[in-house]
Image (cartoon, rainbow, N blue to C red; front, side, top):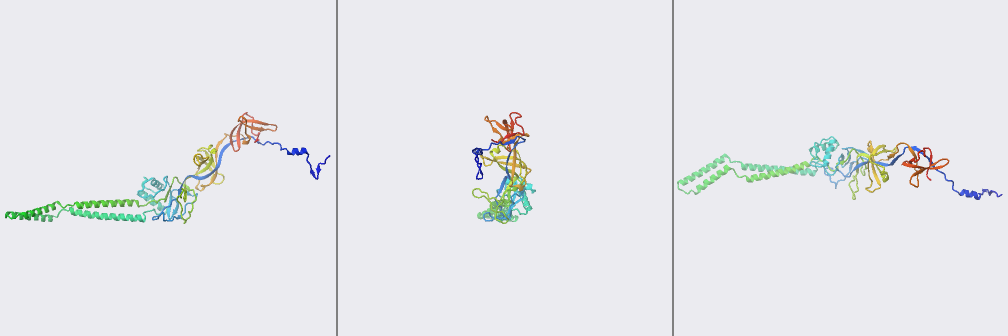
Length: 474
């Protein structure tokens, strides 16, 4: 017999070598059939944001300042990101002038002052009334009532409402001087006309009558003596003409024309003064009030270069890039998520949503909008969820887990892993039941799938029961 060990090693026979090279026998992976309630969900991440926001990239100018020559400096920095913003509150202070926020649908675009008309003035009046400052009128015209309300509002915040600039004050003074000169000219013209239209004094009339009588007497004497009467006749005619002129009064046509011109000049200067005076009262300079569609809101963007004393930067650069120093989120906070086209097909407006993952806000809400994320034809869709109750401003920008239950079974059903269901040649579904003695294919109707399981109903009642094992995969 050949020794089985050579040099301390066991030498395998050809039969043993052949057996060792064969793969191990296939084992069947099974899973139990369960009874459970299935719920299909769309799960994703959502960010706390706002439905709308207003960029603030303008700066107020104090009286006498020029936008081209004045360096804009934050004398009070903008509110930090996440800060809540209520109507009438201060957003920041630039060069000592406030930037205030009010609710209104019309964007801020101009200075508002006495005589200004429009929807922005109406929004200002309505907001001031909400804040407790009576404007009197709410007709969209900046009148004396609005002027008084603005002045009182600014005073309550510790600021002085803007008034006339030095140049405007000089123009007003010049207009007042023109009125004074016109009034003086009108008085002089009136005096000249009064003097011209004044009847002759009685003594002058008597002297004129005496002169006429004397001339007539001389004419009579010349006639009686048969002397030359040419001169006496002329003297009578002259004396009679002087008396008639005194009795009629002198011609004041020139004086009347002068008074008419003086009156017109006075009316014109007064009209210019009234127009100037009505436009130079208390006003709201551009950018001292910023309108946002809905309040309360929150600061939705960390401001840049906005520390107290730093130069303020803002505006719109070439290409449309905004350099806003603040963004005011308008209205209540919402959840914003992005879903695929497949997930979008499972969602609908008004579906209930739960959110939260142990960090940040937790609660429920409802879908309010599902829109293409990048225009028509996109494969991604933006979902907006309105939380209930409203989220605090401090949650702005936080990211949370969002769950939307899109469909569920009405109670417990038979369920198996998705990998346990396969298709037959005729397109129907089946599972393979595994027992200690056999493998049996069981025809089933597949239902809702969720969380890695699928609802199954055996075509033959009783052919599949909870607790039995089915093959998973091949």
